[in-house]
Image 1 (cartoon, rainbow, N blue to C red):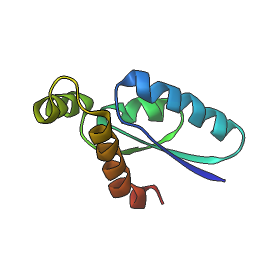
Image 2: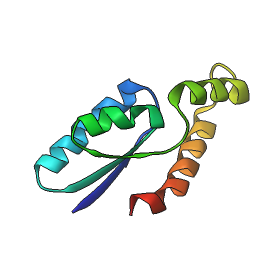
Image 3: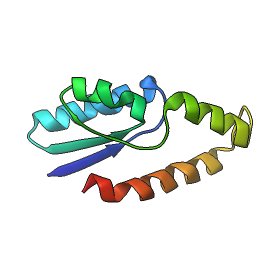
Image 4: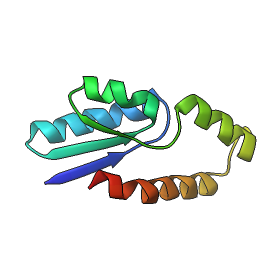
Length: 93
């Protein structure tokens, strides 16, 4: 079975997904992870296939704070994540 895991955020968001991806891979599944560009090396070092998406986390955090303030609305953030995944989906093929 093929799995595509996509995450945005800090290493605290990326690392748990990587643990799930490693277990899926260990069980014989084809797994790819879409992560911010600054985490591609981390994911590849874990033996997983990484696809960069979005912006570097530092840039992304600055843009979120600029656009939405220090405490963004969760519904707006969910929309942003869905939009990023929709744009990324073809690359995960």
